[in-house]
Image 1 (spheres, helix red, strand yellow):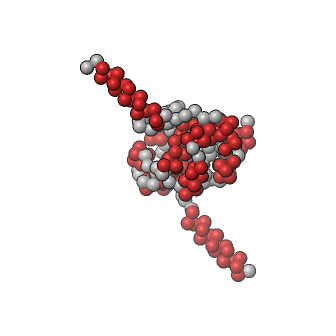
Image 2 (cartoon, rainbow over the protein chains, first blue to last red):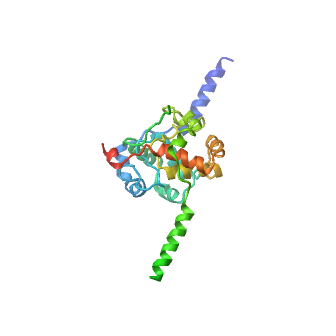
Image 3 (spheres, rainbow over the protein chains, first blue to last red):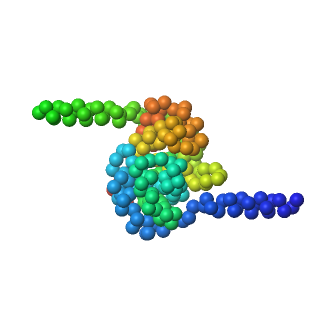
Length: 110
Length: 113
């Protein structure tokens, strides 16, 4: 009986590990970011009203978004092409780069 | 001359296809109460199995926010909480909410600072 919590913890840890988000290297991400700039802007601030700003976004969200484009959970004809060449490390590095920029804010109402 | 007129008509037609409701940021402020429960809390995270912080929306592009909400509503973008919330929003609500968040505009010059 006493082993149950330990076992549960071990299972939870094992289950969580593959889904953990790696911490990326922003300087490597910067080098990979040239294709992104066309739509998302050189500083992560998009020149178009239709494309999202990336500057200052949470890196774990950006990484999740890239993974979802790659695994098809999120569908976008442009992004699904762009992520084809990216591996997990590339995604973490890109996410770290855009997250390091000044931009999006967490708004709190009232 | 004639081709110019055709171009103008084409441009107009293309424009109206892409048109969406004009958002009112002030009206949007009163419609974001559901959003704030997650997006207004610093570092709020999604639930297991995939855990990551929900995106910051302050300064996001309105057109992108509207497109995201519509995709959640139609099911093209899959996230249960967002689908439930977006399904309750009209096109005008979406435009207003997007205008509210987008009003915190971020410029390239600011980004460079």
